[in-house]
Image (cartoon, rainbow, N blue to C red):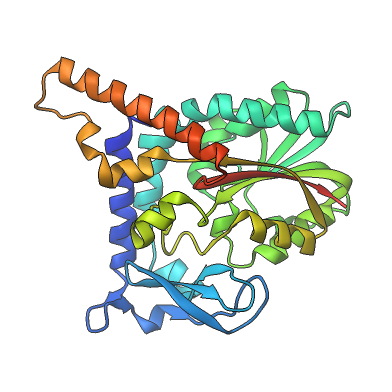
Length: 328
């Protein structure tokens, strides 16, 4: 992450620019023609209180269940015609995913596949990876004996998999696949839930296609963390309009129970770089500084990152959470 920090900054700058292009200068909010009001995706209540204003978009807190979600949200028409972010996706794919993210995730994905195998020890369990990107996790899972397939809508990823990787992927939504009931032993949604306007419906479909006793693995953002408390509207994971909702461990437990799952394991991941972007930018490499100075900065950065991650993970205050849940 340290080496690719400038690329991440450029990626987030491009996302913000896309979001801000939809703002009405007269109001400072996203133009009314692009959005629609929505009820709480978790409990369907229309009662909420404003939480954060970011790039002209408003995150709110449901006063009935405390769920945090984007309201109003982009209409499907706006997503298709106004919020055309192909250049942002291509930048992420070419500049970050392939050279940096996949390398950084290799060990992480191998560990997740190992955890799933320990929870589902049957020989050759069937696995579905929803939002599989370029198939990195599918490869790690198949190395550990899973029979995997994935779902992915980004055509850049689909084309790359077809040309370079021997994994089975469909360019369709989960609901469009019409899988028979109890098709899979394991379903994963890594960094997917926060993008879904209707997470309850998606998780119910996940439950339908999974056999009883099967395992769900997911990662998502957690606004009940130290970084959100310190940064508020500057917290990186308030990322409109891509991130339409945010969770806490308690909300995830409630949501998963509602969809027929029980949590068996939860892990917290504190992201030091989120806070460092605002309060420790002096530790980032400088093009004009002597090489020894940049080496010292990098060493201090990595020490602070590792110690803070260990501390806040223990305190269960991570920006991200990984959850494993069993279908009841």
